[in-house]
Image (cartoon, rainbow, N blue to C red; front, side, top):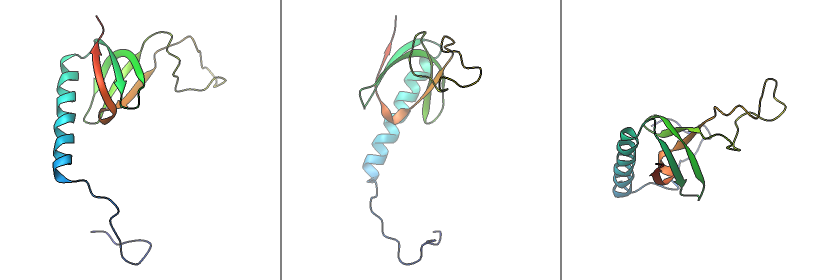
Length: 108
């Protein structure tokens, strides 16, 4: 264990129960497998916070899915006024954490 840079004793404030950690791990694996089956397809994602996102599933890693946003999506990663920024160019990739996903629906 590393040394406490602030001196004194270190006290845990929270420790995830092993059963909960196992459940979260299984959930992440299930979401990852479902997304891997539907790569490069249009999907709608709802997060646990109630946000909805439509986009093309372009990549997935161990912790995130990456959606290429649909035309007209208002979420942008560059602010207006940024040199070379064109608000009509919509090739924005939105990363979403696997743990934040509540539903994933295939858009057909």
